[in-house]
Length: 150
Image (cartoon, rainbow, N blue to C red; front, side):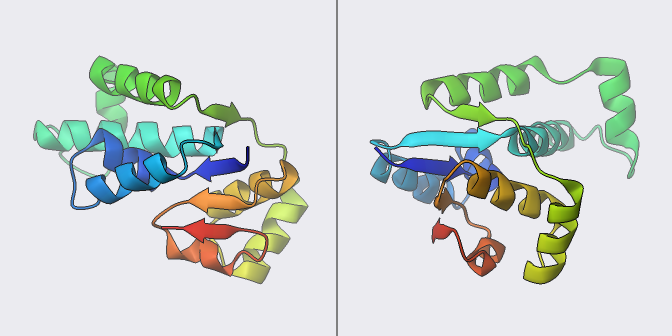
């Protein structure tokens, strides 16, 4: 059984119906015999963008800082929190805690021209001997130790 990392955009396209939902489902089905992993960075991103999408749908977002105010006053939508939990449980995803040195993160981000969160994900894969990532993010193709499945 191989280890496979699932990126934020795959989870998002499962939680919300988009033009990529069927493709995301198909990718997960193709790799279902593998051990799925993700990281706290991915859960962080997923919770943020899912809450943002939820409040946008309700037309409650008013400006760049309104999500922060909504979270402060209303909290995270139970539907979103439970949806993320259920998805991770149903797929039996192990959530990895990142153990990345800041110097390594800065050097790798600069060298591979990656965003900080993508760099942390890539290094988390490297440190956990995960060589495959399921993602729609083309930037991971610049990571020499990762096979990108999209």
